[in-house]
Image 1 (cartoon, one colour):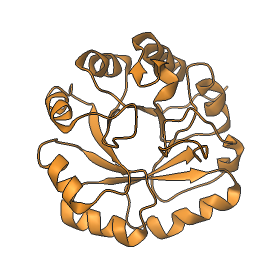
Image 2 (cartoon, helix red, strand yellow):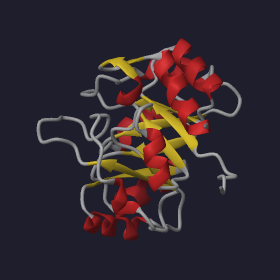
Image 3 (tube, helix red, strand yellow):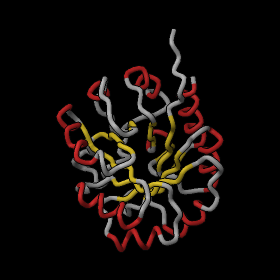
Image 4 (cartoon, helix red, strand yellow):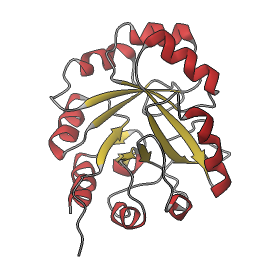
Length: 217
């Protein structure tokens, strides 16, 4: 049996409290996501995020998640909150991504909502501009947010795909299905939010530990 020699990195998104930040770090997460999208139940006020960003344990990278942000919104939040990555989770165009990178000089993770193989084609124009790709499931029509809906997509769509940038798998992942996902795909990282919550918007420490343990084993 051939074992993977490189551990899949883990992103816990929607962190809002110091205790969950600590649990994510101790469980082995590499990325901590702060959601700056007000309709989301995982929204964090910039002042709260500023305090958490100052408590980041060594090795844990901070990600600020935005959806179609204006320059003013980004300047206001990034002026007080230190983030290692900007995650764009809306329908930002390649030119808009370029504008954001040129102005703020922070690496960008661009999320793409997919449901069919043809949806992967949209990634191409962004490749020269972004630092990470994130594949998420398309949001239900009833949802006001583009991510964190607990919805998975057909992972086989991405089987055998190769990209010029590292990529994350997201969408409906949880401690019970992450092992199956990683038998089908070999993403550079996985991103989880609702799958490690005890109720909408409230993270569960044990589910985070179980999720990370399932990846290690």
